[in-house]
Each structure stands twice: as C-alpha cells, then as structure tokens.
Length: 141
Image 1 (cartoon, rainbow, N blue to C red):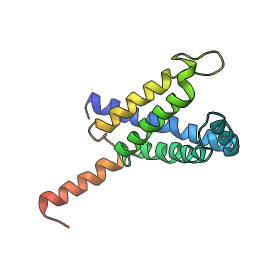
Image 2: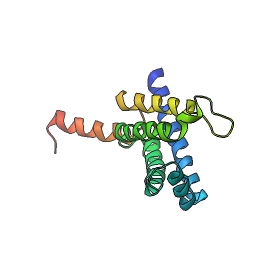
Image 3: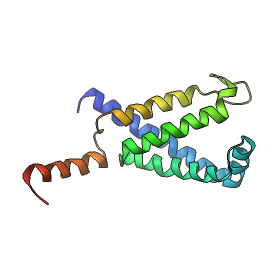
Image 4: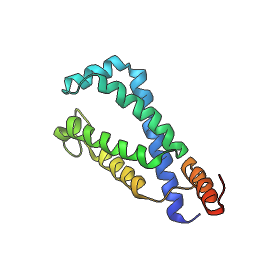
C-alpha cells in the first residue's frame, strides 16, 4: 500500500466518523428541534430527517468503503446546500454566533477527492470489485 492509498483510507474513514457523529448528534438533539432549526432557515422541515439519515448511514458506508463515490457525491451536494443556506451569511470563519463554512469547504474537498479517486484500500468497494473483475478475467459466473 503506497502513501496515497494510506492517506485516502484515512480521509475516507475519518470523514465517515465525522458524519456518523453529526448524524447521531441530530438524533440525540431531537429531530423535531433540528426540523425547527431547518424551518427557521427556510428549508422544509422534513429535510432534517433526510439529512440526519444521510449523515448517519452515509458515514457508516464511508467507514466501510461501501459505495464510496456515490456517498461522497451526496455529501458534496449536501455540504454545498448547508454552506449556501446556513453558513454563507456567517462568513468563512464565522460571526461569533455561528461557525463559518471553512470546515464545510474542507469536507467538500475531501468528498470530491473520494468521488474521483481510485478505490481506497480496505474497503467493501475494492473487495467486491476485485471479486467481480476476477470473475470477468477468468470467465466465471
């Protein structure tokens, strides 16, 4: 395993852990509270439930390396939406009452990297695709 592969693995797992914690936090805070906050931003309240599930399930999928590119692409879209609707007005570093969007930009870049990068090692994606390409090479079913 080369250095790039190790760094890719670390980025995928750490980003997954961060999103799992964000999803768990939304459930622990109470989705009705998160729904109210979303509504106060002009976002339909039901989106809070969708975001919480995407963060939790998507984070777990990233940790496992399952459908990494697709999950990362969804995270890019979700993070752009969060930056645009909730954080842009606070500025890059925040305004004293709300965090800025600097971390969101970092998460977007990591997610974009995972969308375009080779499959990371120690992932379900690599295991499944390795088995599939093995079958294709040797004519197996």
